[in-house]
Amino acid sequence: MATRRRLASERAIARIGPPRRVAYGPTEIEKLDIYKTKRANAPIMIFIHGGAWKGGAAKDSAYMAEMYLAAGVNFVIPDFVSVENAGGSLMTMADQVRRAVAWVHKNAASFGGDPNRLYLSGHSSGGHLGGCVVITDWQKDFGLPADIIKGALLISGIYDLKPVRLSKRSRYVNFDDATEQALSAERHIDMINMPLIVAHGTLETPEFQRQSREFTAAVKAAGKPVEFFVGEGFNHFEMQETMGNPFGLGGRAALELMKLKLGDV
Image (tube, rainbow, N blue to C red; front, top):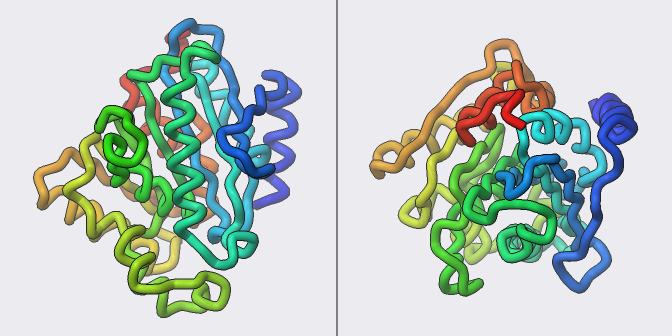
């Protein structure tokens, strides 16, 4: 799967051109790839890649950009430290992703983006980090409007860290009570103030499926706008690949979230 995505990304870049790569923070890894659409003052989709918190890179998700550019959307993929290079700290990773989102909002005009139409998506551990983004107190932590994210698509993510803390991932993630509480989106649903779309595939492990179902149910019970869909016959990795296809489950959901379709350029 990783090789397939890498090759697809290389082919996409050959067609659409390389991204603009800019720094959002002081460390070497704190950079993001911006794929600019032809439309002026265009919506922005930020994608947070997965990789079990220890793998993945922005360049390997470039294959998703082509769909967004064709729909008149700027596509942004941040890089961030792996949990192993962060000394096991998910807090460091969440901080970087939040700062990347804040940078995009503040600097949207520099690449033809509309800061008032900023959307978010994430898959797997990127779905978890996306959950951390949607519960951010933007006013308190960044001096930004509370509603900078207008909608989020979270696929195959983790929204309560307690079960993961009990898993083998605790071998390389330094879980503690503070991290578990702060970075479990399901425990901060009061902070969610945008429409969500949550999904998983039927061939994913039971825990990924349960987390998506229960997070959706909790958001719905709180009276927040949320949609839920299941990818019949899709495994964990195939669910991500649908996110770059306008006719795939994830791509269609993303375009509907932004109220767009192909050909809107």
